Length: 326
Image (tube, rainbow, N blue to C red; front, side):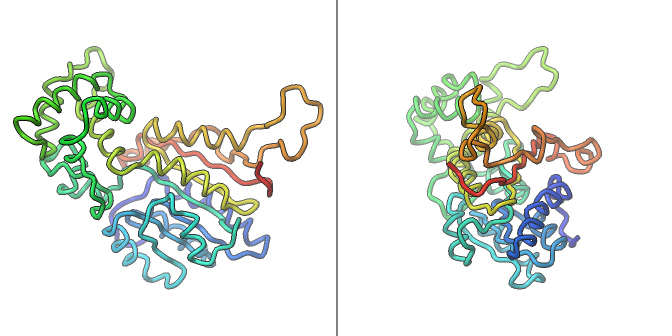
């Protein structure tokens, strides 16, 4: 592995699972193609490229800083690595631009959420533990920031976002204070917002593990600014559709909203569509995906000890087992 310090979550397991699709491509006489839909610092991509010397790996990321860093890290692989500066919901366009035929994808990896690169840069404003501008953009070329959301959205819209994306039960109270306070002073910094949230959210009593009162609202703002769930709802089905027979999709989720979407999409493809009790299920009503990970896998204690981000991971994976999708 290279000199880069960041350790990807469940790296060996992700490489192993993607290898299932890569081997299927080889058996069919195809060149294996893998898309890393969350390129980040390039750790997972590096693992795949090192393990399989015939793979074309396409890395997608909306963050120009990530593209630059990963491209430098993976330069030694030459034309086996291609970077695409876009969002995951442009996956099918990226594949076409790189000459990948329909149903020509061997594997796709989604390592969801904010990257370590972004969390570690104070000026990005993702962390509530350090003072920073209220930015939260994964792509700093995008116009919408967390400050814009807080200073321009209505109380109802703020309530909806904080409730849905943050699963925060005090969403209405928070939204009301945000709107009232911005009339006196605009929302500008992460510590300004975190201090307010710490003041107005009641302390959790008798809780086994107390999370910071700002955690849920910061998550909600980040998801809104970056359209994370909307993009996932498009990108994940597109990745599955792009698979050739035997191809796989692997997803690492870190919070329940992401994981719920993944479970729903995977369940739709792994379920029988025939009415209950039908003696013979026609082929077109049989599942076109198969779970290759039972439920959701978690990181073991050793990995969590060396990589704190692994504590909340939920890994799921499916394989395409039928050519035609109904």
